[in-house]
Length: 436
Image 1 (cartoon, helix red, strand yellow):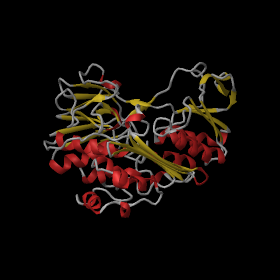
Image 2 (cartoon, rainbow, N blue to C red):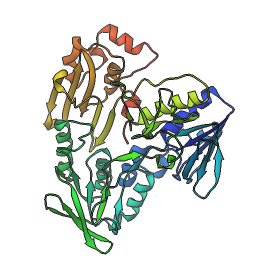
Image 3 (cartoon, helix red, strand yellow):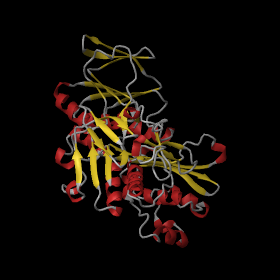
Image 4 (spheres, one colour):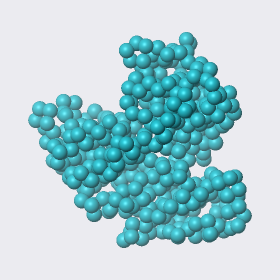
């Protein structure tokens, strides 16, 4: 069997292990447009800020690819897929045939057309190792930075630049930072911590024009009319599934590549996993992209197993986001901002002075979502309660206490969570590793 995997992040790693658990002999080829082996994307802000070295970026043993007999093609971009002849075309014209194909290309940064941006230097995105390296190389000449977007990517970029003592202003269109993953109180707590560290946060405004002379940036003009001086801009509005090379292939692409519970597309022999895939949601069953690190690994593993002839199915993704800023850790999971809040029971606990906040979202006695700020080391328990659909009514008020742990759970629930050979632990690594 000839397996080809496009992309080399965590979904690809899951797929390699999934394939090898069933087929130790088949030929595996990975094609990646990046020049690095698989690395921890959440670490790029620390690489920029100098807290980690390049040697610490890779999270796999050095012999991982050799041990799994993987043919690794780095710095190679796939530009087309022929599903009739089962081959992929690489920039430059070379083709590689496949029996089973996995698309695990992740997401591409979205850069909107902003007036004055096209002819300017020093406009960056911040999603890859190379993005961080480019910024780090220019750092001595950077003084003032505007970050467009107050989501996870924008805040991590700001954190890395802050470590280099740069003056930073974050511009966010919503009424709070982290608006997609967190609610107002959680966003305010994080913003308060950032302001305490000298980072300016402007909400409910957006950049309408980049100002400058020639290719040099002098600042940005906001919709409100305000002018913010800067010499560098980071665009961190969001990402889109990286699937443009599938045009004309017959593979169904909606917001992402549409897959079934086996991670197979509408085209036989072609699979997708990770940020590029559009798979079902755990709660609603509706398909949408789920750009979550542990979820990408799970999807990759399922794809790998099924590509090799095994049987494994996806139970659905739970939205999860985690970020630590200036030593304040945060995690959100599940449904945190219900569209129809009257159908849910929402409990909160807040201690702004100590940067502590908890929000618990319950529906029909079941935990549907949680926001944890400042004390997240037992987040794995919350994830387990959501996935196992357990009745939390008997101990729901205790969920709000910062020291909540297994000891607070009824014995039968502790047994159920522990029973499947360590399914959930108090510091479940898969939850702590969330974040893009």
